[in-house]
Length: 428
Image 1 (cartoon, rainbow, N blue to C red):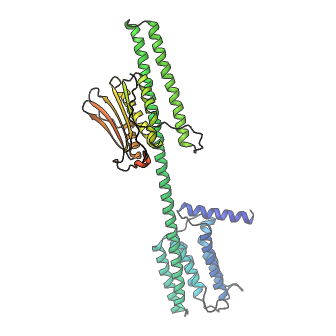
Image 2 (tube, rainbow, N blue to C red):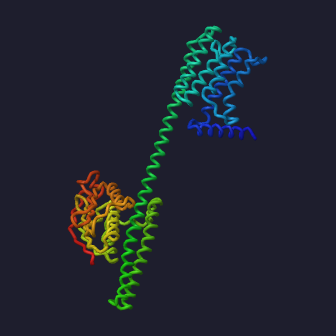
């Protein structure tokens, strides 16, 4: 392996060891600390004329390198106290020998090794453990001052304090980086969850409505065939009616598949300006008409101009109306339903009202229709109420100036002229 390849392998091992233990420092930070320790040892050996001829003090070099070799060469994670112990012993050994000060006179380089070790342990393992190593280092300097006559104890004490401060700053920086990454991941997870819920609501509304209308057509076809058995209709008329109903059901199914593809494409692809628009408030009349053609007894009244609503507000109201009609087709298909939609200067109001059939059943906890409507209303800053009112089931949505969290200027459009009221009825 070439020298460059060995360097890349060492770098990869350093990064792997750091990431496996939640340490986010760049690979060169621990390498720089190790280099500083080795340089201090070599300078201290030179100050004691121990490099040549060789002196037993040279063993302080492999003693200092032992923890790094164990972690990089054998990938063994050394405990913090065992990582600091060789450097403390090497420093104590060096301080037991008086330097000649051929270099760096009159500063001894041996205490610099302790400063680097304190910085490393503090930055990697925390302030408490760094403080413990610093306390042992101060004790080593004190013993050296008493036993060997170490000069400049105050200066070396400052070295240790600087090492502790550098390690604490690196630790603070790493923790801030970890907190930032965790916050970013949490925000990403939250955005992903919100997007999934939004897509689920869109698909639920499309599938629920299309299936409800399809079932109405299939029910009409079944009734037509039953009329032949009962003798109340001729076979040819019943076949024509059943064929028309099944044809409408087929068209609705194909249209629903196209709507699902369009919805997913609109949500997942970037806005290129070529996508088909999603339905809005102006399409509520067509939605009611489609449901009425499937056999549901429904009337529609509209006042104002739905085009005054923004795309987001119009889509939300459309989906609420769609889900409401799907619920009517599912739970009370034989009852009369009335849909009222009005848009004015101060907001919009959508009401879907139908007669109750029997007792109101408690939610079973598995449906998502009402929860989806409530979520859409909250996104728009609108208020939604859904429940029995007398003999009717009423879904009421109000979007306007009196709605908490709603901006009328954004959703409706401030300072626009009033639109004359126009009633639109869908034939039964």
